[in-house]
Length: 120
Figure 1 (spheres, rainbow, N blue to C red):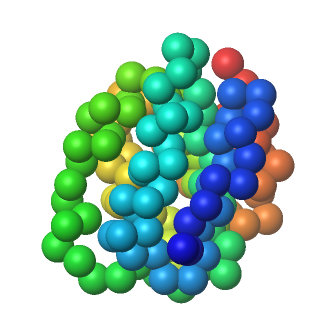
Figure 2: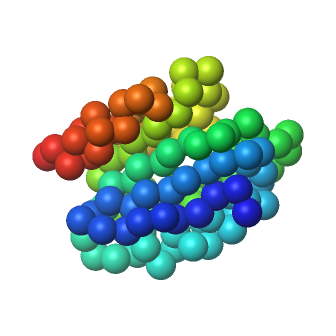
């Protein structure tokens, strides 16, 4: 799988995505996240694109049912990756249409992303 939860502490769930991210990878990750995002306290999500090569082509990317169920439990989302992925990554997570802020940080700005997620 090209996506995995690598940490869940201090209210921040950290996800690493690498290689080619496919729709089945997304579904598997969402299934893992179900237990995490259903806790009573809001959490933040840090997604790190590491050795990332892009997304597979699939018409099913339009499915937003997980977003509709999980958004009430999410405080913020930060995405960290190469500049070349910024626009597509923000589009994939529906930035601007979510009920919480989403920000993109370049790979060298991981500390900045973590600080942004921790700030209230």
